Image (cartoon, rainbow, N blue to C red; front, top):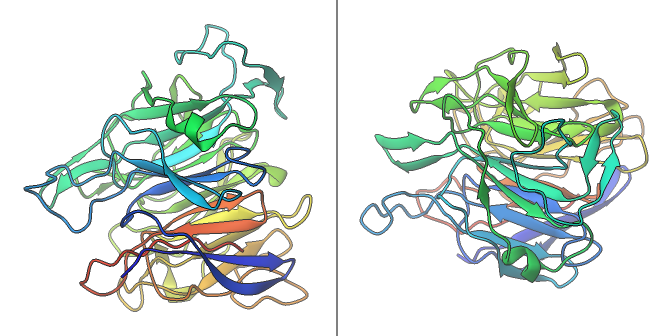
Length: 378
């Protein structure tokens, strides 16, 4: 079956249905994705990073994880190879941010001519965009190694081509995650100056409740996550000054809790539970901004608790105007709730300029190895 991408374009409170974009070059599962604003054109590009090698082939690929990355330019409508990771990573977390200046200087080399600007918090941030990839794992079955290393890719300020990004090199950051972990979630702080990393697991099954901040040079411990959890979603709500974490798995295959984190107060607070399947594990999620000051958290797909670890098709949405997740939009709670064309988990997602949600890849319910490369734009 050919890999494909799916897009769904939406007006505020409505959508117009699914459309497909050009295919990925191969299967992508347990990968991550970010949006690179201005790269390849005004709508930017989706940057897909790492992932698990399917079908598994221990003899051919004993590490079982992609070192490859790939870029899709919306304006060109084409895929292009991106810079190769230093090590293959499956089930890694990734995010983009603008590292803040530090009084003792950055441990990451600063590009010449990079301008600096003040963030909402008053910190001085770089206009150079940094992509960071955290942890992940290598290997198969009982021979799995979790990673603690962090790789960063620094993209010069201003619109650049996908070819220019492909010519860049990933650098290994001096900071490391300790203990090493896979299945963590990562998202930028509301002011964009750092990345919050939550949860994950080590030793192939010891679940973590840690929250840490990566500021471009250090890993800084923060208030513990309320649950020991892996394969959850974490998204940033800049207009509201906090992040939202939801779903994931641990001793049960899926959970439905939502919690909000405020970097300013370093506190977690309870939010409304997810609706479908009594929880979502390994779902795709991103934040849409239909208008200034309004933010919709949209999550789709994943694996459910009930039925037991079944792949999911439904979409649910939490708007800043509502106090609960919804699966049916209304005039009182406008949101995007159109289900995926078919059920899947282990997909990746990115929001495009606040108006489109791109969902890429994923795993079907069959034992076949299907190339399911989806982009859902809402």
